[in-house]
Image (cartoon, rainbow, N blue to C red):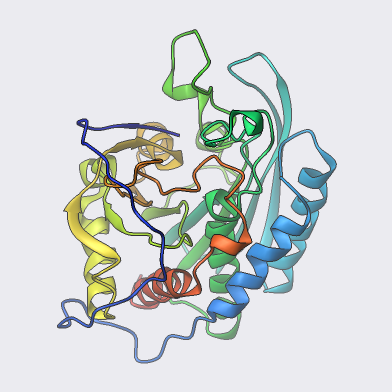
Length: 326
């Protein structure tokens, strides 16, 4: 993904365990919302156990089978959207978007989505010897998938009042790195999302809105109001951030502006016109990256996942979903 923002001087930041601060309720919440962070964490660990899920690898193929089976075991109707795509460096990737639907006949729908592929190069690593190594992608990919899988497990136990589509998007992270000499185009990223947006899994598909989860488990994570999200889906941003505040998570979901980030939600907004928002870290004081110190490095592994962050995101989204009405 890429980001546009005004340059800010960055200082060092030590990643730590997330803390939350209770705040006054500003949004109605469901009476009881269960979300097991341990379960979400186990789903993240399982993905990383396959190895980096880089398209055209065995780990990628094996993980796709597991993801579809997990969603199916949680009662979702499954659609596998297989496709080939070309990358910025003219590599042909064999990909699959995995869609799991709840209440598939309900016309009122909400999308929860995350990319599930791994970055093929750790090109933000402090050790240049690692720049050609693939990334475990525990946070940058697997965390969003893990949270959605746990949400899916809860939706099987307590059905929502609307339709929910859980979409695992492929080939988000094969964009060019710092040594690329050509023009950096937005369309080099989010290849799976672009394919789905132009070829939805169901003819005439519409949704009330989409929520993208990207890097939602890192230690020290904070989520600002990403600017494309506000531009295209301010009401959805308000709904999610106010719900988080009502649950006591305002120290993670900050009422401040982030940057313009070219992520999967950008293509959902611009191609399908479905309002889509991005829950993505924004850490302008982090010297390694605004997305956190492990972004596109070999340190993006299971040891740097914080269950408190997973719980904050998961409980917030389940509360949002259970409060939606047709």
